Amino acid sequence: MNTKYLFLLLFAGWAACAVAQTNTGSGGNMPRAGYEVGEYMKKNLHYPAEALKKGIEGKVLVQFTVGTDGSISDVQIRRGIGGGCDEEAKRIVENMPPWQPAVVDGKPVKAMYTQPITFALDHNTGSKGKADDGEVYQFVDQMPKPGFNLNEFLRENLHYPKSARNNNEQDRVAVTFTVNEDGSLSDVNVLRGEYPDLNEEAIRVVKNMPKWMPGKMNGKPVKVKYTQPITFRMEK
Image 1 (cartoon, rainbow, N blue to C red):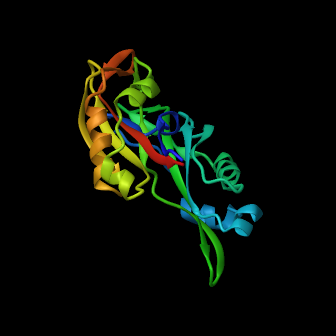
Image 2 (image 1 turned 135 degrees about the horizontal axis):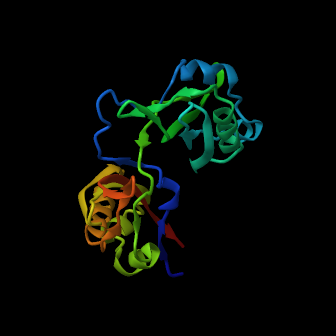
Image 3 (image 1 turned 60 degrees about the vertical axis):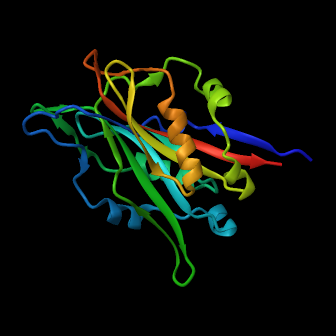
């Protein structure tokens, strides 16, 4: 039987992983909870029965908007693990008390935040869930995006390394890069990847991408740091 090598691009799932490279101004700060998020999780998060039964563990990435009044809205799962954990992570974030809003130039502004919530099974004391440090903030009004068909570009340009095929290496490589004001890409690096040969190929293909449509803040193009996952998977 022939082996098919599939390249899965999950760009939508990590669209929140961007941070505008702009100055927040004098006295600027990021959004933050006015309470201990870890303690809140400990008291309110329930390990789903299905996840317990199936032994599902992992990290769920929850994206939400912190409004100018600190309210939380637009809660979305950006990466899930199933077994009811995604729904539970969304539920607990939607029920969080208000946060302290981001401030730019002395004024509260809306900010998007990505909160990782880890579900872990402690086989001695039982299940547990915890909130890791928030990973991402962004103040851009408009996220950068490719001005071309990204899936088609990868199908035509991404190559599964021979060494990876021989060693049955499969992974989702998270590549970070900066989308500049003119749409060019720079500062391409691997944020997370297990296999050097897959990391190298992911970097190569990103560096050879056409220009993107830049992110915008207040109607003006700005530099934005972006994280793009590229999944290498072999299917027989």
